[in-house]
View 1 (cartoon, helix red, strand yellow):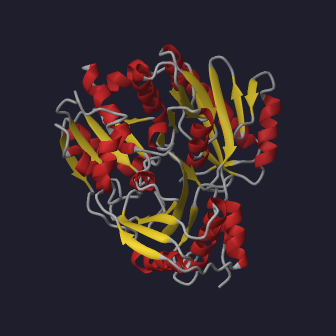
View 2 (cartoon, one colour):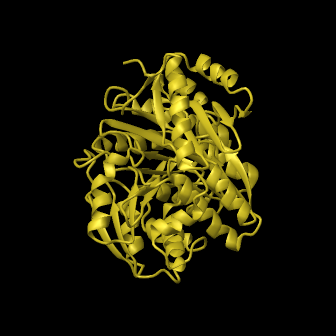
View 3 (tube, helix red, strand yellow):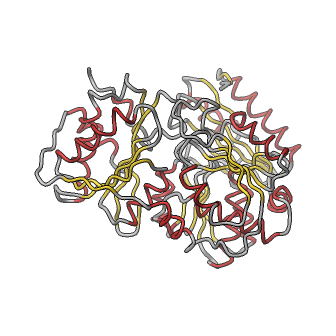
Length: 463
C-alpha cells in the first residue's frame, strides 16, 4: 500500500487507523523520523523517549514503533502510558536527544498519530511544518531504512511525580484553599496527572469520565467544541463547585469552567496567568496568538509586561518562546506554554497558577474573570470554500482603512474592534475570529463580517 503523505501535518503526524497509519507502514514512518533525528543531532546512536496514549490501536502499533527504533540503533526509554505534557517533561528531565509519542490528541477514536520533539539543552524543539516535517515526509516517501547496532530498551517510571514537583518551581501549592473542583477528563490522558496532582492539594476533586477508554464512550475529548462538556457545566452547578476543568484528549490543552457553569475563553486564562507570572517576573515578555489579543495585551501592559503576537499552532508558539525569551505563551485553543518547561505545555503548572489566583482573590471564578475582561469575543466561525486566497484579498480591499497584519491569514484592526481570517492548518476551512470593546459592538461586527464573507461565496460550516 502506497504511503499517504497527507498524514504529515503542520504540527504532527496524524491519520486514520488502519487506512492511513497501520501495522504495515508505521515502521517506515518511524524509520524516516529516526533518520531525520540522526541527521539533525549528528550521530547514529541517539536516546529517544517514547510513550503512548490510550487509543485502541496502541497495542498493535506501539511495539512496532519501538522495534523500528531499536533496529535503527536507538536507545529507547519507554515511559509507556503518558499524557503529552508528561512526555515533554520526560525528554527534558531524562535529558534524552529526542522523543516520539503515539497519540492523536483530541481527534476521534479511529485516529492515531505521533508528536515529535528534539531536545536542545533546556529547550523542547517541536517538529512541524517549519522544523523538519517536510524532510521526514520525503524520507518516508523514499522508503529510507535505518539499520544500526547498539539499540536498546529501558523502562522509566515515576515521571508524573517528578513533573508535579518540577511544576512547583513555576507555581506554588502554598496558599491554595480547599476549593471544590470538578474535572471531566473525557476517558483520556489528563487523568494521569490531574488525579495525582489533586492528591497533594487541600481541594475536593470530583472526577467525571475518569476511566481510560480510547473509544470515547461519552463524548469526544475536544473542549473547543463546547457542547462536548455540557455535562461538566451542569455538574459544576449541581455540586456548587468553585471551578471545573476540561482538558483535551492527550492533556496538552486545558479549559476552565466558572462556578456558574460557563466555559472560560482561553484568552482570559492567558491574561490571568500572565498577570500572576508578572508579579514575580516584572517586565517579562508574554506571547498570545493572533485570534484574540485585546484582553491579554491590555492586562500585560497594565501589569508592566511586554507582549508579542504569535501565529496559531503549538509548534510555532514553542519556537517563538525560544526566539523571544518569553516566560509564557497562551493560545486561544487552550495550549499554555512555559519557558521553564522547555517552551512546551505544562498543564500541571497552569492548573496550580489558576487555583492559587482564585484562592488569593477571595472572589468567585466568574468575578475574577470579569475583572480581567477587556474585550468580548465572537467565538470561531468556520467557512467551507475553495476561494481562500480571493476572499482574503477581498477583505483587504473592503477594510482598506484598517491596520492590517498578514502574520497568519489576514488581521483587520480598528481601535474598538478587530478580526482575523485564516486558513485552517488541519482542515479545509476558512476560520473567522472577531473581538470588540463591547458586547453590542462585537455582535454587530460579527454579523457584518460573516455576511460579507458569505457574499463572496463561502458557506458556514456546522460542526
